Length: 332
Image (cartoon, rainbow, N blue to C red; front, top):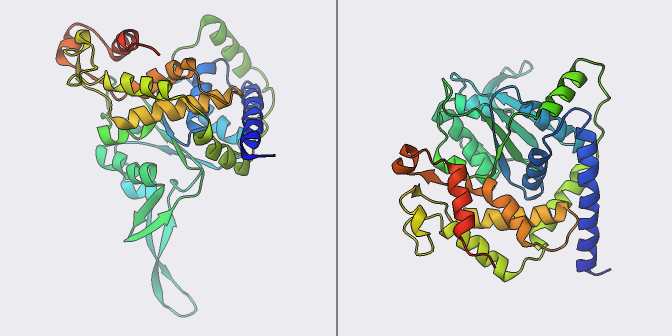
């Protein structure tokens, strides 16, 4: 079997795994299918995700359950105003050898050393501690005491964030925001879903979710995603969509230039293409189509576009800007 045929079989396997993952997660999670899909897109694209929503929408439970279904180690950090960077990364600790009396420093790894790190309410901690995650997210390593420690693969940060308008929150630095491949909006459930949530959580549990994939399978599927084919005209569309978000660019629609303070950088174009490849593979398709690009464009761009003062004064939010951007950018 040649390499392309092996890749096609792997994509088919991933499509089957997606259905099994959603089935296992349904033992604990009601609805949130779009959120689950976007988390899986991040996972197999080997990227980090920022989940935004008010407290109490099961964001923490979802990430914890997903790690269980994927046979991955996971840790959770509750970000608070007094959390120190060393509480995240770990630190050197002085040890005594009782037999010799010798003293030496040893590095004690922090909770960042895991496969899936749930950074809960990341915007409740000051920027200095938020920045402690940046090296691990960008380079998959941590430096402490002048020594660099590699993180195991896969390594993914799934951070939750409360709406910035809430009391006691800090805006994330732009450099850190750009490291999240997607910003995932977790919204309130529908009336029917809320009924099911109350019914399930006030009755005996349906059972523990079972593992669907092994760590080795996940690593193999992550390596597969970049090999999924995509036509040049779809790459051009992704690039044009991102360039149109920049007010100074000739591709920017006239109607948006005074409504956007600054737009997305080249990493957004890369993220759209990679996330589209991941989505295509999740649906068992060994080729990217336009629907994949359109499905991931909003979560890729919504945290990379800053509305201008005029937009805020006129009540035009990011979602409205994204709708206009997608509408006004010519499609292939």
